[in-house]
View 1 (cartoon, rainbow, N blue to C red):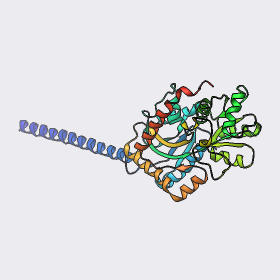
View 2: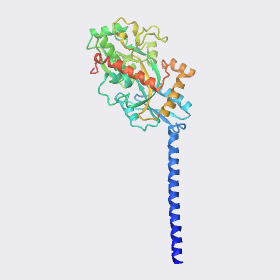
View 3: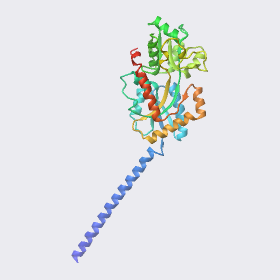
View 4: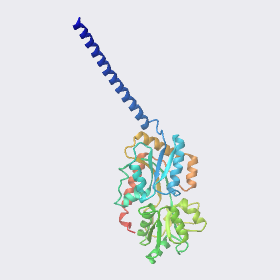
Length: 346
């Protein structure tokens, strides 16, 4: 009897331990499934579940800021989640770039890149601490925009040919302003000066508005900036329109010739326009990239958005992540071919 009682007690204990082990395994399995279920929606259909931020490498009030804020507003409406813009100016957009590459690759931190940070700078410079083709996921090309070469009425030049000649005749007097070392305006003007065998002293600024004011005041002789900012100043006579980048004149200022009309040989070799596109941290899930790409394209296709952007001198673009990356790859190669003609030391 004693042996039987002990055996029964032992069997009961074994059954209890076995039951507890099975319960623990079941709980572990349930917890694992719950955790997986909690992670998957962040990467898929429930994105976004919290605000998205777009970093830009310029101060508020410029063309990049204008494009980013409009797309942020409209994307927020389409994604049914707030999209906010954070201005992180400085170091040729490197502050914003580092803020993006160091962020979690979950789609909630994006970078509104420009031509200077994506292709012009990487094509010409060899000292950049990032590779746009390797360090980001491409989301979508949002918009492009022509620029305007403007000059102070205090200098005699009234065309791009006269401006380049003035620089040749006055190599230590002519100066120009740009939105920073390595910026689009810096690289593009240096290319134009090189092709025209001219010279001008470089004065870097932080924002397009500062350059416009300096040109209007006469402390800076000329510059290249967004058409959006330049047109009002040209129309009120504070600055002189020298040329519109590209092959067509602008309907807003039809008396200002297109750069393609210049008589100086070689100026048609590069079209100094800029473009704006969204990037995400490397490793952002493809389905999240696809959701963001669809939102950008929806904005660019919207008739109301098209009218608004074109009235501000921006051309909305539609792309896939793959076509956007291909475009940047080709543009980098083009600017790499201009490397020997651009003086970055100026």
